[in-house]
Amino acid sequence: MSQRSLLTRNIPKLDLSLSITLFTYFAILLPVLALLAFEIRKRHLHKSEPRGCRKIGSRIESSLADEYDPKYAEGKPASKDENGNERWKVKGLFTYPVKSCRGVELYRGDILKTGIHYDRMFTFAQLGSPFPVSSSTPKAVAANHQWKFISQRTVPLLALVRTEIWLPDPSSPTYSPRATETRSGGVLVIKFPWEKEGWRRTLAWIMRRSTETEKSFRVPLEPDADLIKQNGYETEPVMVQKNIPTGLNMSVHVPPELKYFLGITHPMALFRVHSDHPREVFRCAPKKEDLGYQPVVGFADAYPLHILNLASVRDVGMQVTKDIPKLSAMRFRPNILITGPKDYAEDHWKRIRIGDYEYYCVCRTTRCVLPTADPETGEKNAENQPQKHLNKERAIDQGARGLGCLGMQMVPALEKGTIKVGDDVEVLATGAHWYLRQ
Image (cartoon, rainbow, N blue to C red; front, side):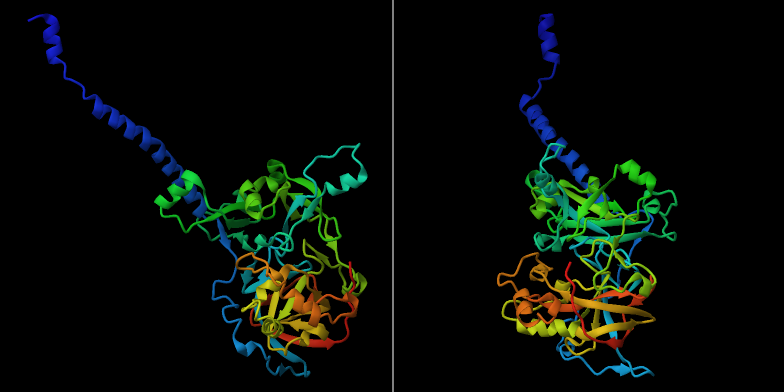
């Protein structure tokens, strides 16, 4: 037997079909496993809480759980203090960190001269024109190239954008005074609906994440000078109603998916109130020399606080039942929701006390199209309700002809205070109101 025959005889034959099969499986499984590991890591990061922080907000049942109970429709006789002042109760407290986005329900809140702490501290905005301008651009065109706030008036899907406030907590095992979350005074977490497409959607289904259809991002709550420089935040003007305050552009944190979800085509940004450039409040507000300080707001439309009587909401709800079977008080975005007074009793309040602190009821709240957006679905009412009803039946202010009114705008009597659910509401003075337009 030849040497070649012996060599061939002692070498095992390779099963090519098995090798090809194994290679094919390996080639398919390797990227899938890599993607699986990537998705697991993303899921962990998404789920993890901001380091060394605690989330603020009410941890008990929502005050709105029974808002449709018929008992709130009629009001009830007020108890009276030793001076004979009528007294009712605070039912719910809400702060809205990002203008027109879903708010945070509180059990207790700090009152500042800007309103409830963190209220309208941020706003989304878009450029009026997607094209850059130069020194040779006509003024009329350049004027359109400006950041302008967006709200549910034009972008109702903002109703589905959720917000969370996380504050540094020294008792947390992950707390560190040098951590970014601590240096920035806390974290704003923003979440919005987002469902993956293509292979990512398939992989999410494999991982049984079909019900997890949210995307989130974080923003420093109160960044210091180092963080501002590190993140490249720019100070820019942004139009809010007819005012053009200066804000801090923090759009570097905003994922492109949010713009797609909201259906916005122009460049989009997230602005934070600039502490060195407050928006002063005049019009119906008390004067500085009378109040002792100058009223200011963040990105609120007009005044620091909005109070709403649930009995008034229930009466409007009964008038629009055909178009809106259940009209939630959250359509009107109150800071303070009260129960007890007869419907619309608040129309003539001038000064009230809540708990230990006094407030000026400076004017009625005129209503735009925003309450036509369902806060649960982000869809506008096809019959333009409740605005149609309010404009017809609640255009009660001679200074706001043709505009429906519901609720009252308020200014705190002091620059600092506190408020909590269950506080007594006492009416100290009543009188006439005349709304002053911007």
